[in-house]
Length: 78
Image (tube, rainbow, N blue to C red; front, side):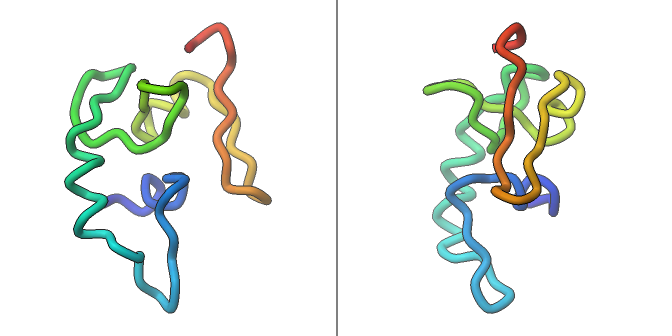
């Protein structure tokens, strides 16, 4: 899993230098296709059933809040 992708994945938690339950979660992430590029492995949710990769979110103009580690998607791109 890429660093920025992991950082902005809302249900992935880093504890003691390790991601909790990463092996199980990666299977879920690989089943999620990116709304922008249509490739698998998207982890950033933009709606109930739509996801983006980190680089695709940047391309769409998403705003990343480093205080809360949340991604804000422009409503015109959902």
